[in-house]
Length: 201
Image (cartoon, rainbow, N blue to C red):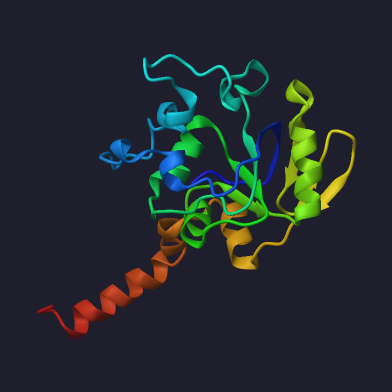
């Protein structure tokens, strides 16, 4: 998993409450078990018209936000069914940070396992960041995970809270497999002992 330390990028405003996982990646795209290739389907029901052409009114289709790597969203982002494809699709598109006042628990935890930072801020701070994000091409935010700070284009600073263990995992690019591999030596020692004591297992 890629490390997340700092990110300076265009932020796309998404002032929608209860953006659920089916909006993020609709159910018809859940057949794959690969983490790549889902970026083109991200928010597909909002990004594309029925004929497959782009919806010019959707924020990520607007020229200023096509290369956005941050989403500033309203309350309860990632609610709905528990599909890890949601952070996969965000990451594959290029979104590595979502800022909101709250996230659904399963989506929130899945983000950390896939290198996406879900940053929780106060309603007042979200309002400021949403205003920053609505500036189009000038909507650049800087996210510093180590300092737990988000800097706006005018120099304003917003802080966010994050559990120490989750922060450690993102900073060091550790998913569940990476965490296990950190203990590879102990695992090898345990298996050697087991082979000696219980060769029949």
